[in-house]
Length: 245
View (cartoon, rainbow, N blue to C red):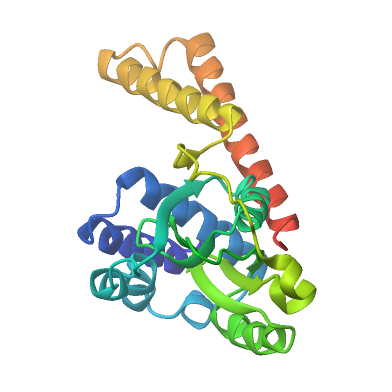
């Protein structure tokens, strides 16, 4: 990574932490943005805008603080998922009548459902930078899609099924709101835990002065860390290929 990109993402990380975004979420988001920037091959400021403006958009502090309370007669629910599962889950929950109003500053889907007249919703996710996103929004609008949130390199769009199926989009007996609010794949959690353990071992070895002399131990740690990185890259590429909802 060039010095310019390193400085940009370091500034972005610092700004996101100042806005109280959890460190783990900051690290994951910066990795996603960095991977997207490599594929986009354009200057970061042109692709994402200044780091300060990007931090403002990602944390969405103003819109989150100014958001109105739930409408009378509406259910609300907030949930999150990893990039590999969220498209499938959006399809499932949209079929249960949940409308995504926005993504909050932590990247969670803020949803509502009308108690009296619930409707099915369709969703799609697109990987696009700010400039491309504007053109994409205009093109999708002709098909009835409207933006409902942005998180990192992903833009999310929604469309009421009534626009396609008419009255059939109404739900007569919607299921109860899901109890879960977090959906992360088990293998992703295992990979993250393994990476953390490897990092802890390496730090301890370095602190004790044995890490630089014990070649086998250090090699094993590096292999584990590399495996975690490769799996993370694979997850990112897979999510990017499946970006359409």
